[in-house]
Length: 360
Image 1: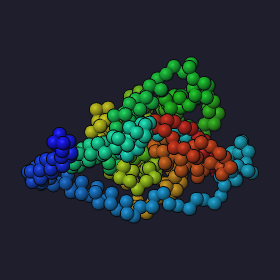
Image 2: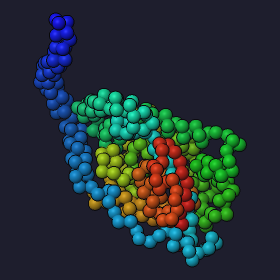
Image 3: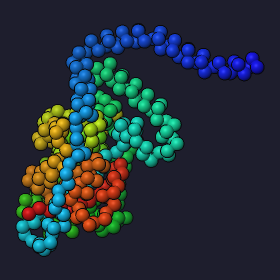
Image 4: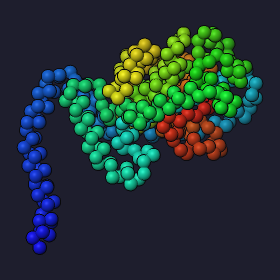
């Protein structure tokens, strides 16, 4: 009986010991944290600002709420032929970002349900600990949750895009070869050459334009995945940062930390891989900053289409972005009767999907 009684008392003793340790350390730890915060007031104010912005969007943002356009996109093509000269065409290739630190904490991903459930609390505690460390350490533009960067798995997935683009073309189908050449920026894209407009680029510049959402995980995915192309430094080859591609969500990971028309900020998780390209080959001339709290996904999708035709001269556009944005785009602009998987399921991490869009 004494052994059983001792075993039964273990949980209460462990709870008492844990409470005693926390109580004993609370005051000195709080004093140290306060001292660190006071040593860097600018970083403290910046973190408080990000926290207030997060609260504002969680409470007031209606990013996913809009009235779908009543017109069926199929009606656009009813009275037009494929050789209609009034129709301008663009080839768009969507590339979803790799796993972010937010995804790692809150999304199941490819983990088993049991593994995700058992590890959720430990992972959440770790992520909060990292966030507190970044806060008291004076890292004003670093966060696990806000504009979340790529996780270690996400970095590996972005490298997978790079490896895919390195594969010999003879092992790909003709259609895949054409799309890979577009992504590599090669000038000779035979199948689409006849569709090039009079504003086509010269032979020395890439045949496609790289664009990215203004969220760091998307930018980093493009930098790492298209690193070999960017390192060739072809004339006018850069990543155009567009706020119109910002993810459709009120969560803090969908809020941009990069200032309007300013330098793209790297993160602690991938600085060693992306810093030089972010500094020298990212174009933020069209970046107006974080999305407005009154904005929504439909507004930004329609603005992106306008930018694609009015601000980007190249025929082919490679987009690094986000799963909810991409799925919403397909649901909005594919004909209503088209039953396509892209309307139902989100594009997986670092997956790619192509589409033609037209205007007149």
